[in-house]
Length: 224
Image (cartoon, rainbow, N blue to C red):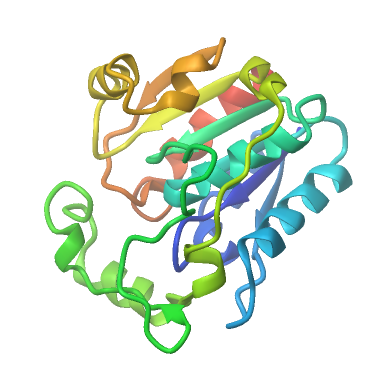
């Protein structure tokens, strides 16, 4: 099965380099996406790239969105609900209609650069050693302002019929269920088929636990 892999902020398709061979060995076709990231790129540009990948997939793909890109994966389910087998959200939750995509950090000169590790100290980055941090910083791509501040538009309630798997890294299943039950994640509160899986990692399991993450993704594909 095709498994589309969308990294979160500052990441391109290379973030999945250690996940890809494991998925291939398990019999799947991983497709890491590098989305438009030039300074004038917009959220619509990135959504179009994701939808193009869904349309080009062999059969119905599993669409994986990490961190902020959970919203991109969910936008694919909204735009093409009959063409997405399952959405997997890794360490993130979809934004609601009318909300900015990822207006989280300071924008300078039209882009939102990686802000350093300060905002991520603690469970998010505890399992990233010095080498992994240097590697992340070296390949971090500033997020175009038109992406970060782009407004999310959701239009088709058939998205709530698309099965969802929430992979919980720096937070646990119980905490995710509590957030959803409390109404903090309105989109998933309305979703009809939501499963959860824990992974013992920080916020970037594709870097620190690629084998374990790949196995979770393969299992999700097998159930789709």
